[in-house]
Length: 607
Image 1: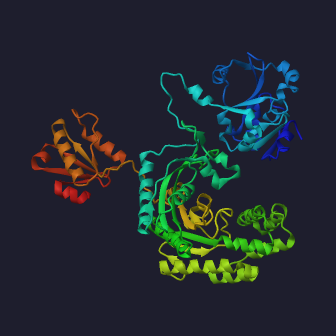
Image 2: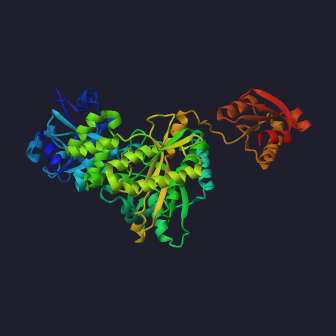
Image 3: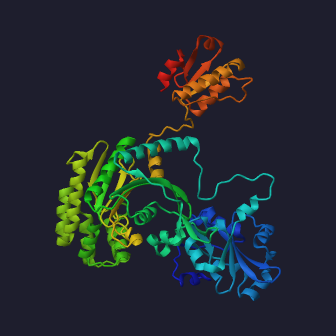
């Protein structure tokens, strides 16, 4: 194995891709160009490693930097509060037992060398790292490299340091975050308002919880590798806190903390959450979640209510959708039939089953053998399971024949949920309005989290788009905070994904305007009358505004153009004649038509 690559793999970390270069690059730029052209590595994934030295002590360290950026030693020295220089190449082999061309973060431990990195290096999910062999590069997970380097790694904010110090602060958005301008926010808010109207129609009440929680509360659900998901810090009181990463854990904390809540407790919450993941296409570190949950009842009627709620949301939004539901106990019964007790192996089995549509049955057979470690008998049982098809009753019959009595509880719960959904939506065929629901044994989400019913919702007019609403029963979570068994079931709307779907289906009309009408003054003498009209329209409940940049010299064309660009549908134009008669010209800016109307007529038309 080339260079220092073995130091990384010997600690249990995997190489995502190994890249053997045709020749040794002359410089970092040539190296990046080769990686991009031959191996499909993106520019953001290319980093360079320098050997540096502190002037005062002579100690060396490795610096990781974006290949596309120029290193400024002055900024680096300022960030470290110590003067630094490049480590002389002629001394490299003597001081660090390897030539400068072998510089790699993999060698940090063997060289007893600390690593300093520009924080932007770890913004990509995977990054290209030198192995120490100039002919071999590796693509590794950024989180794995961070874990490998551990306490020897220090991150510096070169980006802010480079921007600071000028007379004007450069406006910029933090990596992984985004702004929503009015033309995006208004239709998003309209969509969320439609969803919450349905929630409240089903008896759910709003809940607001803090953005910050104690770290131990959030880690209670995640365990293991959870910390890399969290924005974690100590507040001014020294408390160990994190930004919430979802809305379910805060609900569990509330349910345990307020024991006198009337049960079943039905709440919804729409709020931002934060995850310290590497951002990428369509993935952000701050995003909204929209959750509905029912706490305190084990009745399967509430599992069915979540599906009925799902239907109502899709109908409210005017989209065609399909809810696919399953039960965690189906998967447990299959595990018993396979005599698989290891959850990790079951996860591997279902990850492999998920590849059936894209890779075919023969490839799935091979992966069940190689990746999921299944024997031939288990593989045949799994193939029989994925071959189950037909309507609800036919699928239940085939499943029962396959697994026997170990599947009785799962079958009983599936039948009950279907019966309760049918009763609520008034159809024994599983259809209501623009939504339908079907039994789908491939729905295997949250094996370590959900305990019963699970469901996912797909837009039927956008095949392959992904789930827009999902959830299930999770009867074990709240007990971690209360010590008492507390059943719960819920459903979550993927706000960003659903909005993207509505946009793709051309069901979203983008506009930056909240006003229905723009009041236009034709001249300076009419400004006060226009303001009076503005006040009367607003008092009558009509959203109105004026778009004047100079009230002493108002220009009608400029006002009408501004209203049209903003998306305001009407203009109420006041000139001397209209003021004298107590009327206005009401202009439809889309139809390009206008009528002379009284205030009362305008209010009736605009309300």
